[in-house]
Every structure is written in C-alpha cells, then in structure tokens.
Length: 95
Image 1: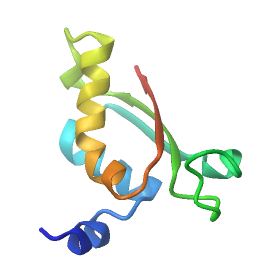
Image 2: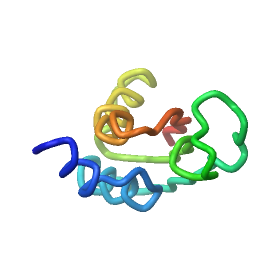
Image 3: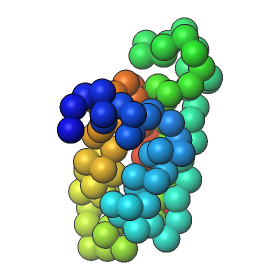
C-alpha cells in the first residue's frame, strides 16, 4: 500500500483509530479522544486543533497476563500507521 493509500484508509482521526483498535485488539472497553485542541501552540500541534494529540482508554483480552509496557506496545503497534501519518502524541490508559 502506498503512503497516499494509507493516509486515505487511515486518516488521523479518533474515529479511525477507534476502528483500527477494535479490529486489532477486540476491546471490551474503548475510548479514543482527540485532545489536540488542548495542545495548540505546543510541539507537534499542526494548527488545526485536531489530529495530533490523542488519549486512548482500552481494555482487551489480549492484555491478560502482560505487563503494562507489553500492553502499551500492543496499542502502539496497532496505531503505528497513524503515528506515521502525523499523530504526535498518544496517551494510553490500559484498563
């Protein structure tokens, strides 16, 4: 898949991130919040007020028996395409 195709399939939005996490980690609880507006003027902000800073709250059966670092790695791996396309910061809360 080309970079352009990836950007179209995976736009950097909370909704797209939520769909991707649902597909990859079959969560029992999932919230994805775009907190970009709270970071206007900060490093990584793009001036639009969306698409750069996110908070993910997630519980998944894939987390069972894993350390917090391993749980976070699963989330980061699932969201890598968004990071590659401009997501600057993702705060992860695993439940």
